[in-house]
Amino acid sequence: MKFVVCMENTSLGDFSTDDLTLGRLYEVVEEIDSRGMLRIVDDSGEDYLYPAQLFEPIEIRDSMAERLHSLFKT
Image 1 (cartoon, rainbow, N blue to C red):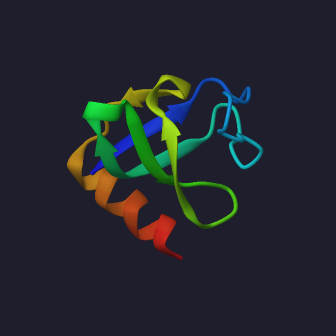
Image 2: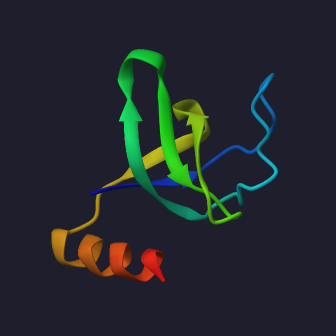
């Protein structure tokens, strides 16, 4: 499980960032390195692709990552 923090929420071309909150923690559902994209569940509750440059990855212990994953599912 990988988590990121939103560090920028200015729109980038075709990508609306209306459903991102600065400083909020998001779980990465899928990482597409070849395109520099992350699929996350945003504030709308749906998963969408966003440019990875909007986020900063953070290190979280496995036990905490599992607990966060469970919380995000509810």
